[in-house]
Amino acid sequence: MKKKIVIAVTGASGSIYAKLLLDKLQELKNQINEIAIVMSDNAKEVWRLELDNEKYNDYPCKIYAKNDFMAPFASGSAKFDTMVIVPCSMGTLGRIAAGISDDLITRAADVVLKERRKLILVARDTPFNLIHIRNMAAITEAGGIICPAIPSFYSKPKTIEDLTMTVVNRVIDLIGLESEGFRWGE
Image 1 (spheres, rainbow, N blue to C red):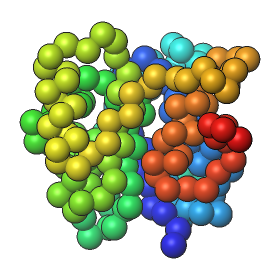
Image 2 (image 1 turned 90 degrees about the vertical axis):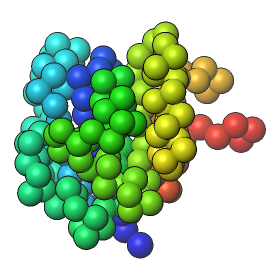
Image 3 (image 1 turned 180 degrees about the horizontal axis):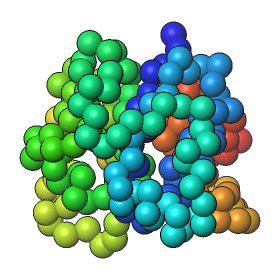
């Protein structure tokens, strides 16, 4: 069955994770029915700062405004399978943990959790304080998955993109898509 996926991008540093995930999802489009994108204002600003472009507009996906509560994935009846927040700021993570649905990103995350679907938060901050850790625990207990943007090195990445893809490939696995990538022991 093809997936319906929401990609949310917040203002945490790490726009490259969102870009490479969106690029990879385009390669895997035969496994995907629909991709929807929602970005915070800060996410757009950080993307421009870190990647020197506005290519988030170039993906063949519908981009929803951060306050568009009429977006289909603002309701459980739209049956989106998975939501990935990449990168996920600690502010967004905290609002989700507290059940605060003050924009489309946090509302959609609330919907995904209440419908017992897959919510993946690619947390991008360091170090974590106790509040962050407790918020991560609350989301995990509610059924969400915390996938920190912590790259691995055993694949011997040569570029920043290679290194970043170690996290993106983990997200692809968590979504449940079939993809080529480094596998331990292969």
